Amino acid sequence: MPSHQHLLLKQFLTAATGPLARQQPSLGSLRLGLEIGSLFQFLPWGVYLESIRIEGMAAEWIRPKNAPAGRVLLYLHGGGYVLGSLNTHRSLVGTLAQRCNLHALAVDYRKAPDYPFPAALDDARLAYRWLLEQGYQPHNIIVAGDSAGGGLALALLIALRDEKLPLPAAAVCLSPWTDLVLPTALIRRVAHEELQLLEALTIRGWGGQYAAEVPLTHPLVSPTQADLRNLPPLLIQVSDAEVLCDEVLGFAGKASRAGVPVTLQTFEGLVHWWHLFWRLVPEARLALDQVAVFTNGIWAAQAEAARLVREARRSKTAAARLRAHS
Image 1 (spheres, helix red, strand yellow):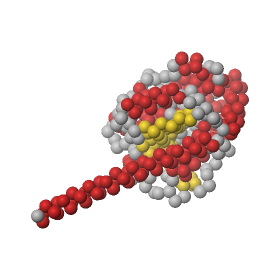
Image 2 (cartoon, helix red, strand yellow):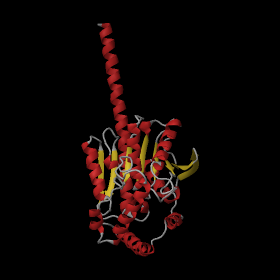
Image 3 (cartoon, rainbow, N blue to C red):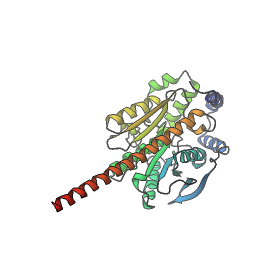
Image 4 (cartoon, rainbow, N blue to C red):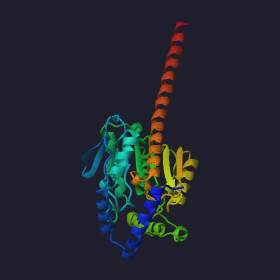
């Protein structure tokens, strides 16, 4: 059962989206509204900001105090490939970095419709390659994103695998947009709830703006259409009340059948983007704490694998010495 805080949030969002649906605001107005809303979001205490540029692309390091230097979270923000920025997600990335005890690199990838596919993917690939050039090892990088950013993170993994580039240690996908083909049956299913209907109709249009001249079924546009073999471990979080829920569950199942280690965590009755409201909604804090459990598990598994390799080498060396003296 969702918390009282989430109920208040949902009531507020429902009240706000009604007038928006009737006014049909421009994309510029929506972007401005999100930017204004971001003025009331702040980094957690003890987390520091460093603005940089990566070959002209705006980006920023979000650094928790005392986080280890060699590990990094590459974060790709959500917003339907048309909205969102470093500003709108800074607070979320900050608390995620702090909970995971990781330095985070957030990038302001290009948005549709001015920059359709593959601009966002090219920028994500650029950021990943830049990290490698800075000396970060692939096994010390985790890619993360929410909504469209989660789908972009998955597309990045698929593109890197197909290019035979070294893959990151894992990916964290918060309510990822895995399939830009929103079926009419889904629209009918959510038509009874204004908030969900607005989300479905809106993102259906955004998907077309992002895909532009390529089919919505392109595997790097809709990752659920791709061959998912040989991807690194995935953490996927989704609420059963989200428009994207069925598609996310379908993607998780397909990835599991392809042999990908998938940790699927479902939440009850929460709105899309609930993670952004972590200061208000306890379910968001719980979800982000679960991300930290997952990332710590990745590092622990790596340490255990390294220990087993060392033990095997010592055993091999000891056996060779024994043979030499026998």
